[in-house]
Amino acid sequence: MIGGGGREHALVWKLRQSALVEHIWCAPGNGGIAPLAECIAVNTGDVGALVALGEKLRPDLTIVGPELPLVAGIADEFAARGLPVVGPSKQAARLEGSKAFAKEFLLRHGIPTGSLYGIYDSASGAYSALCAVDWPCVIKADGLAAGKGVLVASSPDEATGFIERAMVDREFGVAGDSVVLEEGLTGPELSYIVLTDGARVASLAASRDHKRLFDGDKGPNTGGMGAYSADGLLGAGLEEKIRNTIVRPTLAALAKENIPYRGFLYFGLMLTAEGPKVLEFNCRLGDPETQALVMRMDFDLAAVLHAAAAGNLDPSAVRWKPGAGVCVVMAAAGYPGEPRTGAKIDGLAGAELVPGVVAFHAGTRREGATCFVSGGRVLGVTASGPNLAAASGLCYDAVAQIRFEGAQFRKDIGVHAEAQKAPAGGSSTGAASDATSSGATSSGATSSAATKG
View: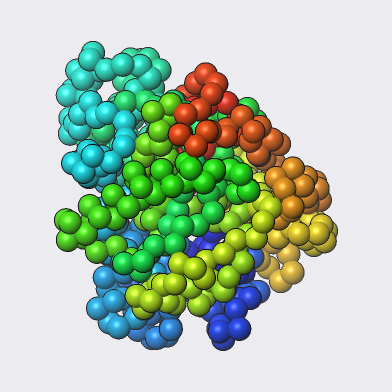
């Protein structure tokens, strides 16, 4: 397992339940993963070091959690050495690595998405373009920006400020060498993820993320403050429309352009009045959606992923427990700016005594039996239940047991989920809320373009 966040802890936790799994290495892992896997300190951005580790260990399967090594081509390097890997090629990962490439790909193949105003490689060009856009307008830094490179701007001043941060101040580094300006869309957002072996496709249960730091979708954007997956989130008619108008055309278009795709493909969708439209692609599982999803998995994850890597995926093997999975993220003081690390975490044992609860670690380090805060998103407290309300209640019962200085968490994950449901045709109700620059929201409709953490 490559990665060290909450998504990777959730996957390791699920993989350990398989009778097929003898040993798991995790690079680099975290304080919660350490009891489940052998953690090895490797920088996930150092593809050369990861390849050397793979050649040394010769694992039966490698799963890539974060986007950076995928965009850097780790799947190609492992495949070239005969090392089975779950993850797309460097060429395919451009769908996430370049917002401009993804937008042009969508438009080139007629896949539903917001209109494009333009792609600009100079701040002056982007400033000038603001005279001809409708508001709200979405602005995206082209490259990977750790979930912070997208803004839904409601005014020229707001847009100008973001362009200056990206292209003049270089806040996002080379990711801001160019920016994409596109139409803002309105409606509830949805995370729709599939797994493909290059030919066959299995859909995961639908889920929804919450990006803003504070309740009611207020405050700054984050990597994700919680997520849920529940029965009824996506009706059969709407799901079939998503498959027919977005998923199948995307995979067919990749094949047409001679870009084989194997691994997870995440569709960040807006359920607009005209139907579902693509906000973004991610070339891996979402975080914290994964935490909510693993609680509902009714299949051997190791067996399914091994089959996908070998080109033998059986979509009928991917089954889901009825009910709901909910993840509430507990973040460090100062997050999402400069998180304050080092605080001792108390109450984890008590939290996991709550029925149906697992506390997935994201930014923790372990010293003996004690865990300390080591990153921005610290824990993903996750529960399963017979319905969304029950799962959410269990989550918050567990959160109440956990204490560390300056802990931040939202208290409304999934609370307003009913307002987010859309009819089979894809239309939604409710007015647009204040603009959010990424992810799904828990109340009302949203004007947004997502960038997932």
